[in-house]
Structures are given as C-alpha cells and as structure tokens.
Image (cartoon, rainbow over all chains, first blue to last red; front, side, top):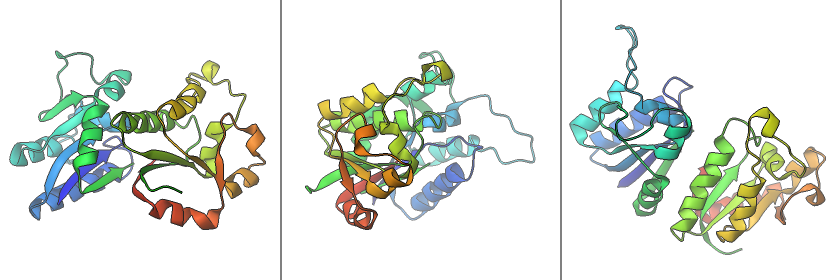
Length: 121
Length: 120
C-alpha cells in the first residue's frame, strides 16, 4: 500500500512524531511504500541540522535521516512553514541529512496519489 | 450532501499557535489541485468564524481573509456543529460567512462521506 505521512508536531513535543516514526519504520518493514513524509507546521523543526542531544538520549532527528539513508524515503519540510520559523532561508541553508524543503504542492500531489493518508498532529 | 474527498475538521481556537492558519493553507493547496474539500467547524473551532476579531496587537494575522477565500477556491460547504455554537452562546448571526449547521448526531455521517479527514 502507498502511504503519505504528514507530521505537524515538533520532535520533542508530545508523542505524535514518535508514533509517526514507529509507524513509518513498521510500514517499511512490512514492505509498504512511503510516498513521502511531509513535515508541516511545527513538524518542520525536524529538519534542523544542529540537533545534538546527550549521548545517552535517542536522537529524534538522526533516526529519520537514518531511515532515509536505508530506505531512500523522501523527507520534505514545508518551505513556507520552515521560513516562517527560521528553519530554512534559502538553498544555502544546511538541513539535517536526508531532508529537503519544498512547497505544499508536493504534499497535495502525494495526498492525491496515496492509498492512505496519515496525519500526526 | 455531495460526496467530497477532503474534510478539514477544525476544532482548535483561532489563535492556538498557527495550526488553524496552516491547516486552511493546506486545504487551499488541495483545492488548487481541484480536489473537492469542505470544512467542519467543531467545538472551539467555531470561534474562528466569530466576527469582530482584532488579533493583530497580539501578534496574529486576522484569519477572516483566509476564511473568506475558501469560497473563491470552491471549498464548501462550511459546516458548523449546532451544539458547539449553542454551548458557546453564539448564533449564526455572529459569524463572518454563511454556513450550514449540522447537529452533533449527524456529524459521524458527514465524516463518513469524506475520503480523508484532516485535523485542524
């Protein structure tokens, strides 16, 4: 099945982003296709490249980068939401590995194509 | 009631962060892709439609322009749960746009008619 996953919550606010991560990892393990993970609203904070939690804590950004590296999934942060929050300014802005920035059109396009749309708020 | 793909279920206060504004912007993008969409204002979400708001001094953009643009993008109907208005002492005359009211007991049926529910 083809899934579009949208994350509206920042990495350290509540459980939504954690649940999204575990869902995506489980879906990939079952052989499903993740069309795109779209980071919207406060979810764009996932794309920050400077996150460095203490060594004994899980890194909630790096684990997405790792998933993208292993499975080639498309991690997209919304450009308008990211600019508004200072996460992204222009093409020279560094982002966490595996992330890119694009407009809401990429979200709409994947929502239309997907068999299932899951939004984690 | 016509079958519709997307229903934005707006239950947040208008200025609870930017979630209402950004949820509406997402819906407008879907409409630009010619996707049929409508909105259900529920619980504190009905405050989004209350006339006479001046959020600018508090650091927020007035959402009314965005709400009024829904019609231009053929997004609708705008559903409002009757009980949510009553519980907050509001009537349809307090709202900035024409809406269709729906009773709480009919909300599940409305949701079932849509392929995708978006949270807001």
